[in-house]
Image (cartoon, rainbow, N blue to C red; front, side):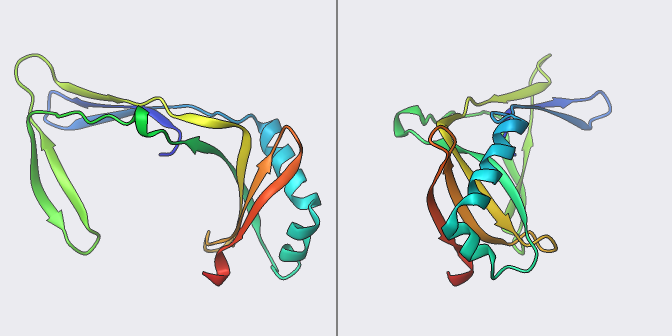
Length: 150
């Protein structure tokens, strides 16, 4: 749900809920291909990948986090109904009064310009071997993290 910028939960007449999401893709396919090529052509990345038998790459924007942009909102009618301790997940119910039968949650994520994260993943387990920060403007690798040693 990292690219979701709107979630709408609407109560249907039968008492069920319909969830709609709106997504945003901040990177083009060309950006993704370029980022992978830049990572693969970097000597340090090539040395690291020499030890990895099989891998796949995933390219994602880097979300900019600003303390000034954080906001807290209170929603009335939200009641905790159950807790599943095995997954540490809490279920909530939303009650609506009158004609309003939907809840909409909006967010406007911002991303670092020209920098992306390239993740090197195990194709069978999706475990991250490496994460590589790539600057698309300068066509350079600016950082690499080896997650197998952590």
